[in-house]
Picture 1 (cartoon, rainbow, N blue to C red):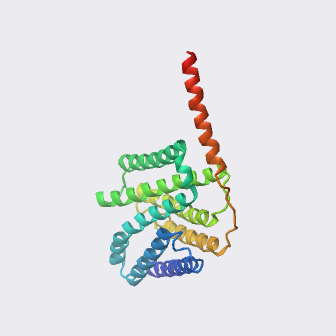
Picture 2 (cartoon, rainbow, N blue to C red):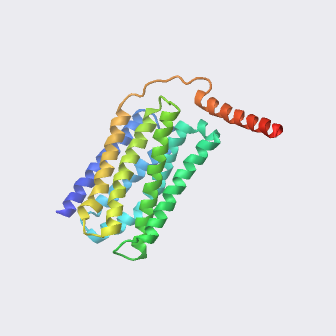
Picture 3 (cartoon, rainbow, N blue to C red):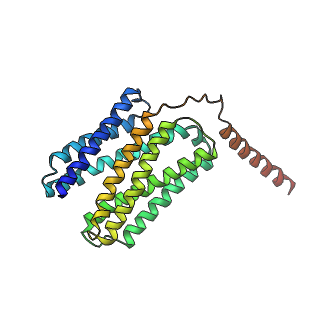
Length: 251
């Protein structure tokens, strides 16, 4: 039964990846989403290899862990790409950059401490390293997604809805997959339906999100010559510096 479910999940995943790839090419988004396109292509090839060996349970899991590293790296690059497409101008604001990196750093520190203090109850150091890496990346991407959506609201950014759709897909997938990873870390194989099948279901939900978002036409938004939010905060920083100099002189 389990090999059959693996095949169904892989076929569904591959079909959705083909749909995402088709939409990216159809809308001529290859240059706008270079890393996301690379990620989807890699995942499609990865799914094909896994599907080919899905009948051999031991070989399947060896292939699964061997191919997982590339997917993790490309996931980070794809998330970074969508984030910078929207907030490249805002990276000139010092506090915004500091807040973003601080959130990522806190997520990584928390993941490392959790892996160190509460290692997996089953398996050796290899299992601990794999699960720890998954959790660290999951926390980091979840933190970046929170910064992304909160910052869009703060700066009142409109447009670039496809970037938002891609971020939504990754945020949904990583957040739900974290539950599976944490369950596996604490309980081992006791709750396999959660630890193994929730991440697979979460990824399918993320893919469906990408397909739905890329199918929608992106509304055209004409940006002003200068981003008012950026100018406002830059000017505010300048005013604070000037006031600081004035008060120092008076004292």
